[in-house]
Every structure is written in structure tokens, then in C-alpha cells.
Length: 330
Image (cartoon, rainbow, N blue to C red; front, side):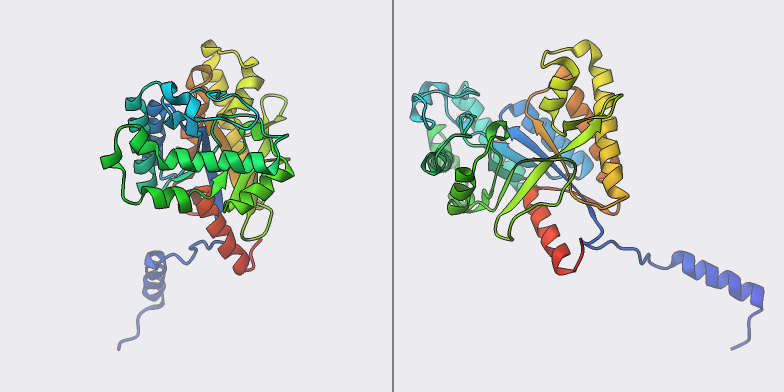
């Protein structure tokens, strides 16, 4: 083989290096996780919108479902929360069986799209003083209402064959209404077969706590606004911060920008630093003219496509973090 001139050899070597496969593939130890969840999961238009956001950004969400939204209001007395009269719910009931059917179809379609369905209890009551038995009653009611939901909506023939197994074995996470917990709740969750709780709050993004068979996640407090005061990374808390819980659509763009900047700064700090999971909590309510949903969509559009970022469900995050621990990562 003839010897090539040095300049030509150098040029060919550079060309080969530029075309070589990248060796910087990230591992579980170095990936940034983003976990977005929605509490309530009722409004069917927002079910549709959230799924479209996921399709456009590549994100997967956890939906913390309140089970009274699968009960027609005329059948409300079939639900009785611990310490309450039959038919009471702090978040109401479905207004029609057609609404329930649409919601069930969204739930099943979201599952097929690799989103996660989790529990937010039923009637959105504060269980901070409940006994273990009362918590177990609420969890049992949630399961029984979901199991019978297709039949109660007049659609028994359309119930997916896997529905009962899904209710019994796939719903593994919980978030307490008002983030109000006690030790009785954690004990009842474990006995009921749940694998994680996402009701906590931490000073900033944090790794989940607890043993491998039951993890506890905490929504982070993040700096927000011109004075960088910390607020829970949740739309409702931002709504209270920005407008004292009163709808103010006239400043929707300002609230959107403040929220986006707070989310992005918190994400960037983790992405450039410790890479602890970054969690955001949302509701199926558009507050202040939809400011918080728009900010969320902007963030996910910007970060979920990054090569070292995964926008995942809580269940997926547990698997990621388990592999990270096995690999000796942080």
C-alpha cells in the first residue's frame, strides 16, 4: 500500500473522526429525569390536551385520578368517605354517563400511550387525621369504583378485557389530597400494595426516600418571581402566589413567563448539577387564563428532546433510579 502524504493522512483521519459514532451515550447514572403529574384527572378536554402535549414533546405523565369522577352525580350516594355522609365529595361527581364513558376511554388510551394512572383517592377529603382503617376503606372504595366503572356507565360490553387486572395490579402510586398525610396512611398504602407515595414537599429537588418496595417522592420548593421566593412546583401554589387564588386572566402572559422561568431555572440547576429528578405537579384546571399549562408545555418542548433527559412517569422514574443505584450512581 503506498504511503500517503502526511497532510492527506491527517485530513482523512479528521474526516473519519467526524463521522464516527458518538461515544457520549448517557447512562442511567447521568440522565436527568423530569416527572410531571396531574391531580384529579377529570376534565375530558384537558385529558385530550395533555395527551396531545405528550405526543408533541415525547413526555409521559402520571395521572392521579379522583374516583368520584367515574360516578354519575345521581349515583353519588354510592360513595361514602370516612367520617362523611354518603354522597359527599369535595370535588363533585360526573355530570353524565357520557362524560364518564369519555373519561374511561381517555384513561385507557393514556395507558396504551405509556402514561401512568395512579390514585388521588375519591372525594378529595383531608385525611390527615384518618385512622389506618379509614385510609384502607378509601383505597378499597377507589378500587371497587374503578372496577365497576364501565358497567356503571352503561358500557359493560366495552370494558377492556385487561381492565380488572389493570385496576388491581397496575395502579401503584398515590398522592394525598391537599398533600395531607399521616403515618396511618403510609401503613395502609403498603398493606394495600402501593409502591410509592408522591405527597411530600422538599426544600428543592430530592431523591426519593424509602426502601425499594415503597418509595416516597417530594414535590420541590423552587425559587420564583422577582424576589426568588420559594414555592411548591405546582400550578395551584403558583396560582395562589400570583393572584391570591382569584382568576386574573388579564396578566396571564406575565404569570406564564414567571412560571416558565421558575421551572426552567430549577431544571437547569439540576441538569447542570446533581441531576436529581425534577418534579412538577399540575391539576386538570386552567388557572389564570391557562398560564401554567402553557408554561409547562413550553418547558417540555424545550427539554424533553435533550439527549440526556427523560420526561417520565413516577413508575418509570423508580425503574431508572433503581438501575442508577445498581450502577453505583448517586
